Length: 428
Image (tube, one colour):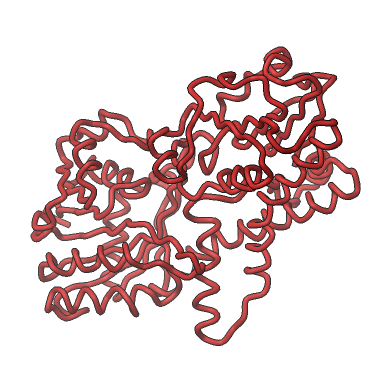
């Protein structure tokens, strides 16, 4: 790289924007997104995800655009679009195919296309490359080249950023892999790992989150078991964690764009080749069941407290898919809320980070402007471990709870000294 290459990022979400900002410290970058509103916000230094600062966004080395013709002369096109599942839990590759079409239409000879989106093993070569060839009229491995470097962005985590997480790269030729490795070396300080093939890199990515999903499913199954036994799951885990090699996972709602989606990508490919993945799908079933289980627990505790289930008032604290982020897409808290409402329970939602417009558009639900807007409540559910909820104390809980109120602490936020003595307290 004697001359500075031009890099284009296709997709400026949670993954694409941090990559664009990181590369802009060293190279000219084109940030492309089909969402005009997103592009216009970024031009003003606004990141609605809350992950990147205004100063970083407005780096003069980044040019934001929704005009795909601006991509025609770039050396590296990095594709960072979502890869969700459809209603049948099969891979939904619409965004990936569309991004490949855009890249193909604007591909110059000698360019390298790098895919960062999570896919099943073989997807890049079986689905994406034929689209690139068709749209560009160019020949793969002769006129253009392809690499895969799975994203490892963790929203809300300031400690594990792009720069300090080892980056896996793979290329269609050893030369491509090395060029992409050299490119990422400029922004990733933790080191580069060159995988032997694109398929191996794809498989490595998809099992990272599948492993986590299965481990959380084990914790959730233990929570179901210990609840029947009258044991505090978190106390059991705390004791077990004193052993040096005990893996520290915890039960909870599993939402987001990676952990609950990636196992289905692996399962899809497995079934396509005639292998039925039992453990992978078992983990998914357990984790998908947890909103229903927690809703049933709320109902049982309402009855135990002598309260009427229908029209009971429940405050749900947090609706984002994980703590300390603004993203509400694929939040399993919404599944819990829907379960509660199916019982005729009146739910109120408070989240200081979530965008009310996003919640209304995605789920047709309204956020409270203040935590005590509809108080008093019969039940308070701590659903997301936002740092904003750590300051809630015993006096405030007494104030917003109706008589012998019920506290559901899904994430184990509250310490024992913050729980009103007259309340019923339960945690997962």
